[in-house]
Image (cartoon, rainbow, N blue to C red; front, side, top):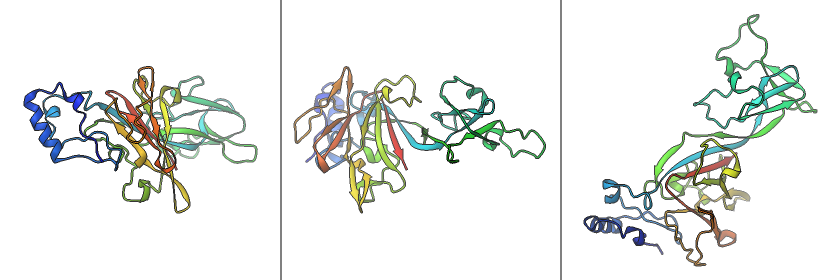
Length: 287
């Protein structure tokens, strides 16, 4: 069972466009799932061709971040302290090993004091060092008491950000580059889509502070005795008056923000996220 276009939102459409939109929407629809389809985008959309309506076809930013354990390597300060980058800025945008950015107290860095193993950071130098010439190690890695390398949780940008329109990417299989609709449960064997972070007014596009986002865990599914993410149960809608078909409940709100709202339980649990003009959707993945 599929919902139709949000006709309430189309009341303001000029009459000369209405018949064309009706014909196009009857000719083509984009189905997300058997009961959770929210809005159907026409192949040829006369609204977009003349002027994009931000309420019906919002433009938003998609991000992909990897959350992983990184070796705690950084710039040396004396014999027992390093300052390392959180690497929240993509490597292709800025050299994370620039000493000027790794001074104590610099935003986006953290400091470790303890046993430090000297290393020569070839990535920072840009060339292999020559014996006897400028080989003094300026960098180091932190060592645990058992001799293992110390690590820390960090979030790293995987792909360049995308600014897209909802009609082009109305659901998970189009938004998420790690979505694999071929395999059972639509999961990627190399990564786990752990969370979706959303922000409607994100001042710092590179913030990794959860307080700047609404965070929702991706529903899980057991496949071959292994728990995997099930991105098919993350639903996106451009309709702020969305109603769940089974419970007839709407989206939760916090102030002016719409919260990711869970409906159903168990293997029928699904999360609905409202897509709004100018918002940011971040997919957080792990190995």
